[in-house]
Amino acid sequence: MNQVEIGVKRLDHGADLPLPAHATSGSAGVDLMAAVDEPVTLVPGARALVQTGLSIELPEGFEAQVRPRSGLANKHGVTVLNSPGTIDADYRGEVCVILINHGQDAFTINRGERIAQMVVAPVTFVTWREENELNTSARGAGGFGSTGKDNPNTSGPSEQKT
Image (cartoon, rainbow, N blue to C red; front, side, top):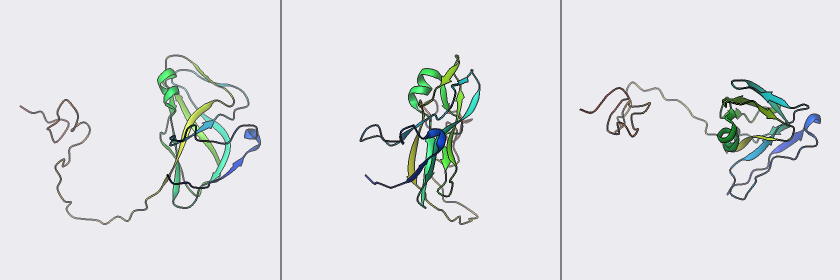
């Protein structure tokens, strides 16, 4: 397992909240907590930008991905709207989470509640090489369900085996 040291700054409105930490030795991500002054209620279909009270300094060549917490999604239908949200290495502003309520009931976010998880990962920088033709593959241009269980041997979503 790789370890990377990341600078973190607690902002005034998040000074009393714990720093993100791995819950177990096998956890890929760390929990982000809501640094809200007052509870925020999301009615079904509503979204909100929720502050965490943290700014981070990622090393060059890394990114942080903000992802949903599976328990919130499963139990309440609350998820990260732009999942995964990307935090670039050169961003120094507050880490915020865009939450949306896809559930049927209103959901209230309280101060210190775990609202999302953040995974830090290396970034691969690419150079694009334009080609007139691409090599063929077994899959070809098949996409959007072309390898699904309904039509496992088709090359595209609209083709049906007869």
